[in-house]
Amino acid sequence: MSCRKNLSIFIALVLILFCAFPAAAQEKENIKGLEKKIGKESNETLRDAEKTEELVNKNRAELENILNELESSLQKGKSGLKQSKDKFQSLLEQKEKLEAEIEKEKDAVKNVQGAVFTAAKNAHSLVKKSPVTSEHPDRLQKLQPLLQKERFPGMDGIKTLVWVLKTEMRESGNIEKRKGTIIGTEGEEKEAEIVRAGALTSVYKLPGGKVGFLQMNSQGEMVAVPGNLSWFTRGDINDFIDGESSHLPMDLSGGAVFKRLTQSRGIMEWIQAGGMLVWPIFIVAFAALVIAVERIIFLMRIRSNSDRIMSDINGYVQKGKWQECKEYCETNSRFPTCRVFGSVLEHLGVSQEAMENAIQEAILRQVPRLERFLPTLNILGAIAPLLGLLGTVTGMINTFHIITLFGTGDPKLMSGGISEALVTTQLGLAIAIPIMLMHHFLERRVDKIVGDIEEKGNSFTLTLIKYGVIKGGKDSGDNA
Image 1: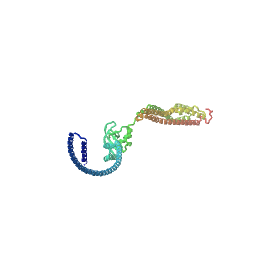
Image 2: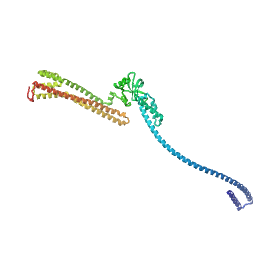
Image 3: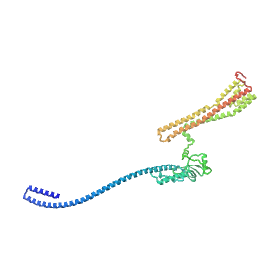
């Protein structure tokens, strides 16, 4: 209807336009023709408009039906969306719960994984050094997967770990004897008789009779421990392998004793580690040894002849053979007792007090000979630790010099100076202590000899008084 109305208005406007502006006859005819044409087109347009209106009305009804269907579908979609949202929210809550449970399980799994990894690492260190591994070499390979920190071991891995530990515990209580191949001290393979005592110690005996300890290397092979064993240790190992003894030296240190045995140094290496100051200390020791030996021999000879000399002289005095007595003392003048008696015989006939003074003077003349070299020995005993202390200072100076140049990153660089310091100190003290003990012994021996000479001198004086050779009393002016 609206299209028809608009068309009518348009035609009216066209007619008014042609009426308002008159033109020529030709133009009027054209206008009439045009009017007819317009009228015809207008009718066609009206028919088309009616058809269009019908189609529009029909399409509108269809669109309204479609719209109603879409609105219905939208309502259903909204209802489904709400249900989906509710379900999604429920699933999110369920997911959060499951994630929380998974986190708890992860912590438990991590704890189990860490415990298994630690146990496997400790077991690997134990098995690597254990002599049982030579009989079960596959244990190291089975433990390798368990040493991967990021890998979960699983029940198979845990069972493997339990098997390894149970094997170690079971074999630690057994003593196994077998024949097998070992790596000798020179690196060659040899057939030997092997005895394993639990999980601590393995020993071997070669066909030639050589015995020793065994330890595991990084490839799981049994290697002979280098080093010189004592005669008693070798004998115990040999008797145990032959079944003649139940006593076997054991290594309870986990191989530390073997390491110490292989790193032991000889005497020359020990001396070289002490540096140049070791030789002055040895010179002091040699000089002290010479003095000590000379003094011991000298003093022991005096002790062995004192009583015999006194007995011989008393025999001459009883018989009044003074000339023979003097000759006897001159013959044995190397002994201090004879020299003292010789001095006393030169004062025959004097008073007792004068005789005692003569004896004391004679004894005082013998003391320097008895104490000869003892002060020197005392000085050597004091010098030895001082030389050791000097070596200590020298070694520490070298150590600090190395620290200044290279820092403290490598302890091997400092070991030379520290070794020099410790060796010289040890050697100085080791020499000074016996020197001081020997000096004390010799000094006490000299005191004892001097006391014995005084005793023998007083006894000789009493013998002379008894036989009337000298006068008793304190009258120093009396003469023979």
